[in-house]
Image (cartoon, rainbow, N blue to C red):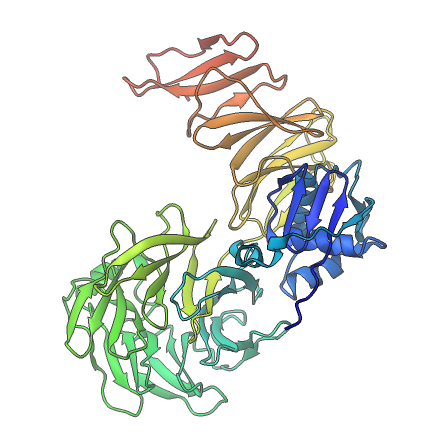
Length: 585
């Protein structure tokens, strides 16, 4: 077998970028870069003889997914920060105004390719990290590396499939895994759509009746789609078009049995039973139903009162004998042959939406809104129906993922994620404070939240905190018109509350094991601010503009009252600003 020759590494400045190891070292130390940032860097280096347009980078790196310029800007900012570059005095990456970027450093090929360049660790390095795309209400697909589910799945990529600005919900894979069906209200009513997973594919609408059809489920033979009507009923239609058969007058959440002969469903309508009152409704409708595809009246599948609460989110296991369903945010399993049900032991964990792997050895699930950390999780299930170690596979910021689905071979997950476009706007004002022009967006992207803007004292720059999907909150600085945004806070740590100290330094607060203030010069590494007070979550400290004092509220451990305390950072002295017999924060 011919073994391809390793690609030489690149040396520039104090950095070494190795395409074989998929790593970048600065001063001999590996720098933290997400996979998309690595690919952008290598593409810029390989095309350093020209300006690489933004459109080319997005098409090459994000492979047809919907990505705004702000996502690319964030990646460039991360590269500059980790490489020790400066957007205003670039050594490595130069911005070509309105066009793109060019790698300007002298590059020397380094032929000392690492011997370990083809180890399983280096091959899987990028596969273990995910760059999360920010979306409106959309469906994303998650590739898993799962050899027969015997080894732990590894995240390979996250890809956005739809971006309609509407509610694109309830994904369902075709049996061969090449297409996905979903429901969307982009026409004003929920209709069914089908889309190929091939890059560049378009959605194809297959229902047109305005009946608000939701929750499609693809039949095992790939010929039919079962679905629920929002106002009531379970129906089946051919994927290629044809007559619709109505199988039940009331119901939601249809799921095909592995042999394609039956549908399991819940006997209530989504439109008539809200999440808040389902438990009450469950006192009368606390079971699942089963209906034959070829005809016959629906019959009870799970037994009323066993357990006493609404039964929903039914999912067949591949053996056709066991059915999983949800009860009060916990999974239960029914042995159809024995007619017995039992709860799967999750310990203290709860599930909002879940789907089993095809072999029934694992569960993928989302957590309720009140659960922290929120996200998409996985757990193994042993032979006694007990959950093993819980693994957070993808953190989720903002609204939770919904409608989790899995492909027949267990290699793909699909889910819906609701993220709205978020921005920071500016309006010019005259000396009296009245507006003297139209407002405009300084930051406008699909972040979960952009917030806490603060102008530098000369008005030439502003800083803000940004929470992006799957990431910690970070502090960015940009020019007053919103251009040239770059991150200044350390990656992987929640940092917020930026405050300018003059025009060259910005202070912000990071939350680690404690809550510390950092001061970041625009050129040079950030430094932790030495304070006497031990800040914890909820103390809301503020730093003075000259950087010499910090004020915060403290809670008295005995009286539980809040008081404001001022610390002089030069002398280390502290003093109360408010009386201790009142609670002031």
